[in-house]
Image (tube, rainbow, N blue to C red; front, side):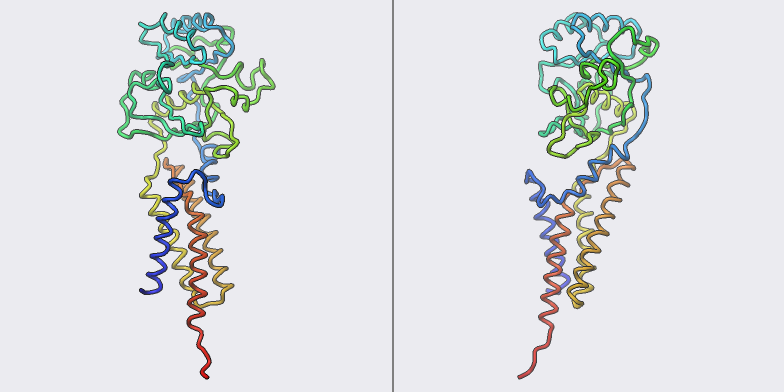
Length: 349
């Protein structure tokens, strides 16, 4: 077999092996997580910054009693909103009592606390993070708020998280209501902490306190997203608002297919192999220098590609690339040394 074909066959085998390992391993080998860090910063650094104004309004139930909440629901109902979504599953049986009083009102949509996931569209991952929405679920809480909008052909969609403050959010308190805002708006009532973050009632409130509440999740907007010690940063009702916003604008982030990701990985490692094959008969220090240079160039090119595709509405993961580059560099260095040694003429006796 020709040397270049041998090199290519080895790096392709390495590609297949690493992809299989990353698919089943609960950890990332040797902490080569550079592209995970890049992906973790996408929504915070390059996400859509916009406001939905009065189209979506969040009301914090906070420490209100079920009787108070129910009185506010009746009050808001009279302002003719587009729909009212209520998720108070933390009240358990008391919430069911509120639902019974409004069971025939089609304008009010309640989360179903009796079923897994409460009928919410968000998909909770094993690490309590939420990145995707179950888009083929026609009867989800969020789709019912939009009068049963038609589901997508895809089973899941990646949520395009909008940077805060994207929505108008106030305490469930008639003293602070601007009643004109409710008319024609989608109103979401749920728990957002005892008091809203940064409100006068709670000047020392820390977002990290969400770790103590069961209906709070980790999202890509989290400062510690993908880190093992990340604490929740959004409540379920906030995530529902994000999903409703995406449904309104049809602005989900599309995941780049695994086949396309593998093709990109293959292109990068083949480029590195071809570059290093050009210096196979050079000094070993030159081979190391070329290997490191190609490593950093591909690292930067991969980062640029991830960011560029994200700004175009696509989410690309190249988590395996860092380990693949190291394997390919080590293999090519070893092969270059072997080739150089094998071609060194021996002295005749």
